[in-house]
Image (cartoon, rainbow, N blue to C red):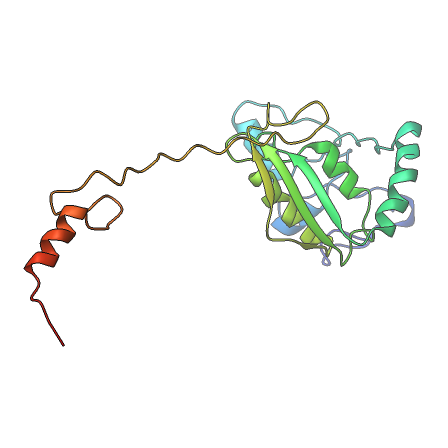
Amino acid sequence: MDLTNSTQPAASPASSTSLPSPSPSSSPATAKAVSHPSSPTGSLPPRRARGLRRHGRRPRRGRAPHLPLIRPSPAVRAELAEVTPALEAADAFVVLTPEYNHSFPASLKNLIDRHYTEWRAKPVGFVSYGGVSGGLRAVEQLRQVFAELHAVTVRDTVSFHHPHGQFDEDGRHRTRPAPRARPRSSSTSSPGGATRSGTPSPSARTAREEAAPCCSG
């Protein structure tokens, strides 16, 4: 495949294994596309290399190193062998997540990304815990992830704010006692002759009865 301009002659069979260096007169699109280790600037475009030389910096040669493919260890594969069938057989999911730095942990993301069809067209609910937000910011990011997997997230969320000390040793939530209501006194009347509850005081009722005209049938 020839990556040079169409106006240049085709390369001979002997030199077909290497690409020519981009000439200064080539178009910007072609100059960016042609890149190989044998060029003077390595994997950098000529314009970028000239900018580095203008500021007294030497462009690096060669290509960027290839990152190794991350494969799960035998222990992780053994755990996935038990989790994957459970996810496949489930009709719905409840995801329990903490919040760290406005997001969910990487271990949860790794588990989600290891599966795809297991999440499809299934409802997903969330239980979160954290600081002031109660983990709600992590839940909002998880909604975007599960939307890409064609899962349906439930709008309502259960969240615990500052959960430390709210659960006992067995994991049960400690119910806090409700605050006691202040008793209201019915004997205290306002200057208008009514008590705090809104009913007239006995003295006010007596005065109104005496002032009312007597009607006889």
